[in-house]
Image 1: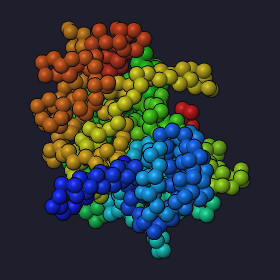
Image 2: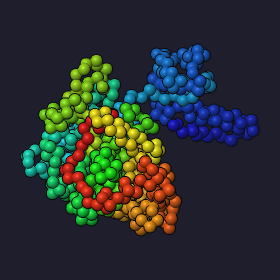
Image 3: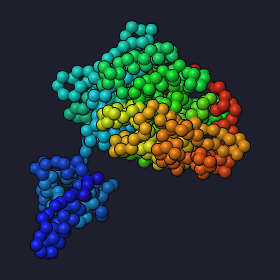
Image 4: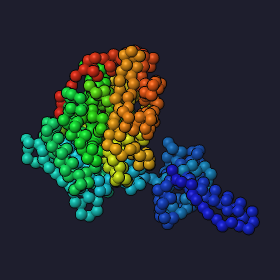
Length: 580
């Protein structure tokens, strides 16, 4: 939205002069409020294509008024009571003063269908418009390797690669190339500049969240997407070592495995914590076990390691529903839910788009392509070509592995804006500013099995909310810089009272006596119940949960689920295709 214009005037000798000045200022301010901010910044001599929205459907008088100020190439936009016009920027104010039916005028902006509508859904397009693109920030991608695709080159004429460093840790192959096809896709979500979908007949550009960030390629996963703890830990260690040299401020871990012990003992979690304490934001996929009901747990208690660590930012997956607006977005049914096994940490921390995400294809020889060739993106999806041929540049994948790099890219933008931010400050900012408007329930029926999955939008499903990059960049709130100040809290079930409480440590940012109250971070629609003895009640026996008022307790807090030791041993879980 445009800001009210500010006007100054010399104090006249007569009151009538003052009145005229104030009226002129008020009228000019009203005109400016009807022009989008990016439109106001253009010179008056510029010829612009604009979308004029009207209070009432435009009639002939409206059309004639626009034509009277030189508007041409008109096209009706009935859906928004609008018209598209090409005209001089300098005539727009005159048009507004002539036609009181005009509600708002904005540029006919090129659609950024980046990452299958994910960029506008999380507000990253607004960040790009403000000049934030991740320049100078290094993101370590610990994955299956990152290939030197066109979208990961520098802007301008030199086209040098933004993969500034590569190293292999996988003992099964002596290469830093992406043999699996996962790491390149992840890197494109973080930092793809859309070069391969920017052309004369391209009408959609698949651009990443931080399209000028640098990528540090630390290949740990083999050609089948698997690795061991030691391999990943070695890669994390190297990221810490290279931190100063390449300004590595973010590590992306789109991988996970089952939980076998407390995060305080888990070596993978401890390695992630060390990176965090070294000043690197660690972003981890939540896991893809949200449909797991093998223990009557409805997907609860399925967060994978190292996403169970309270330091890191753990990310679940949303569906964009094929639109750039987030208003209709829903949780992906496969997205793992908290609380974590054994430690009962409240996870995930955030959710972000992760379903049917379009990003860079590593090559047509990688493992994922050979297994799922139908996921190749057709040329017609991003060009005006009628060719049914598939692209050799873009590929579609789903999973929390795709959601995590959305948050990694957002973290890079925050750190470009303010390099002094600590990992805890980044995490707290992203969680507090997250979009918190969700439905109560949503359902999805898998067409291949006929099974219907129903998701409830509690904090163990959506965390603090949906990533909102623009809101995070617009906020100036700062958590304490101390490492560990933004630890994810734990949940405790009190069998005596039949309630579940959120317990905050004394140094936790969202503790009731520290910086932000829990309702600010998670929202009143996510946390239910009252506040008892300084602890927020997540739900109690009187709160509707699941299919009846009492079933929630046996589902989530049954001894075989959260308190048990059930694990998934997969080194990396990816949902191919995902919810539709």
